[in-house]
Image (cartoon, rainbow over all chains, first blue to last red; front, side, top):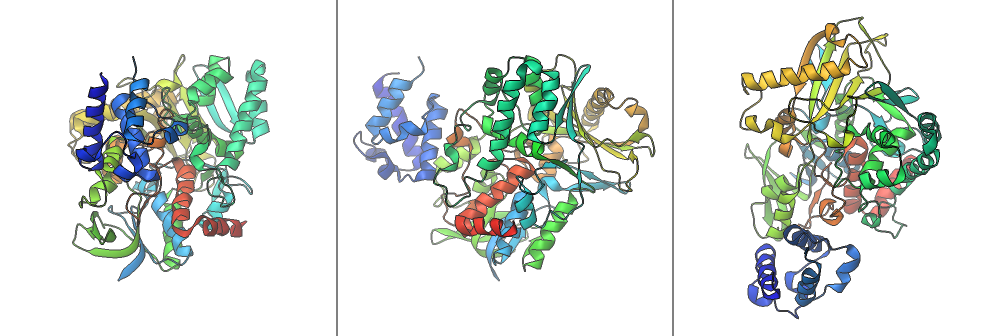
Length: 81
Length: 494
């Protein structure tokens, strides 16, 4: 999967599940603020990534994922070969 | 009339929350859709005998042990509990029988007799079990800063732990052999679930002299004595929002119940379906709840025995065929790969048992042909399937109760479909949502929901079984009352 494909798929998924406009999902935007995540819905995000990409995000890695770009990077570098 | 708290579902979780919150002065209403309260604690009568459905034994009731203080708080400690024999669980695999003894030292000593080369590993394992009874309080203790889900035991795989700790594969089978009361699944079972499902029983193990309706009665009596209500045939069909939070529950008969707070003791996916309004719950939460997998169900054979034929045995017997793989149940359709054999305490205190239950895991797939049928109208092929499986269960049980078949006066069976139809549990699951050590965050559910005044409780959240559901009820109540108040209520009973 190319990076462009990852970005498109992730954005479509998050826009649908978290009910926000696609236009708000810009690479440098803050995920928590844009998707209005609290500690509960952060779990929804982690579960969604696990379900769709078979990628496990350990709690310890969560602080390193702040922007959408961070999330794309994380998924790209952890995708199963 | 407006209530402080409306609780949907009268399983142990719902009733325990009702008891605690009414004790704390809240005006509580418990709504049960069925004709009797109790959820998995329901029992049913045949030929004048009461048969249990989901309850068989409980652990940790002695002073200072896991459930002592909470059971006192819930008014359950004074029920007629009968302590099981020192060797409370026996595991028969093929021709060999092994025993679990009560008390962590005795437990280690007894198994070391059979596996002397594993004595160090057994000691370490028993210590871990023992720590569990202390650790379970960490999340409730307001003076403890460690978050509950931070325990490494959540993302550690139980089967992997066992294979890395013990060298003898038979010992791993034996240690897992009493865990039909958990879904043993190699790829996902968290070590925390495995240890929690075993630890309190090793502390001490008890049977009720009577059926599980005694628990239900004690809890509902307690709620009513505190001014609360438990109403059956009240099937909640909708939770209605006003001003960003829930305002009232609507029942199928049109009744409305207003409350400040709502607790759902039903499956989280079903809870989401009650909120028709899209505003309060985003798809991300609804979809996650709907995607959660459920654990397997149970096939139960409840036997009424001819008087004076089978001697009562004061322990649980887990029976497996030779070369069984305890971690590969439910076994193939039509076969029985493992069994819990549990006697009811004789009502008259006599020598002989009148009732024995045989339980074996059964997958939902094995029931799928009949999912559109109703109780009593499932057809001859369903009856034949149950008869064949009951026969296979009795055959395996005869390994430890010789001649059992000849002593049967009546035989009643239930499948996951029965569970689904009486408890409304999705997939007729016995132990609720499957916890997965690979995704602990997503499968250990918080009592909190995105709706500010809607809370969850019950076996689907964190822990299952009487012990697990009771602890979970404390977590739910701690979210509502505050940790400190919940903690003080428990401390006050000690």
